[in-house]
Image (cartoon, rainbow, N blue to C red):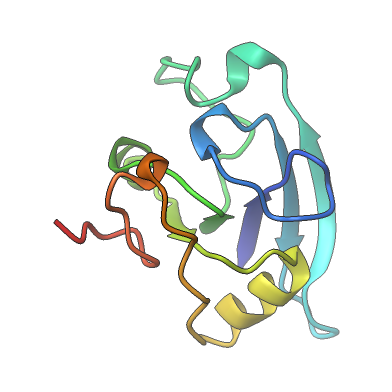
Length: 125
């Protein structure tokens, strides 16, 4: 399983997933999750700006973990075969371990930017 985490500072899980340009990428291995890449994308490859149907550097991950996103972001990534999980967990490795173990993540902090998206990316509306 390959998991990307939105992390503008490469230390904590950050929100505003559509505008995020930095991602930590993990793969599950026999030794547990291992960080395999750090993506630092140009502005035009942030999903808010990227409107092409061609390949994107985040393609190929199974799950994307973020602190916050809108329903449009969830749908857009689902179209690319990526499941989005919004969480209040701030530590990337802890969140990745929980996802791999099939455990629930704490829900994201509530604010207007989350547009009613719940922890598993489904709408609460």
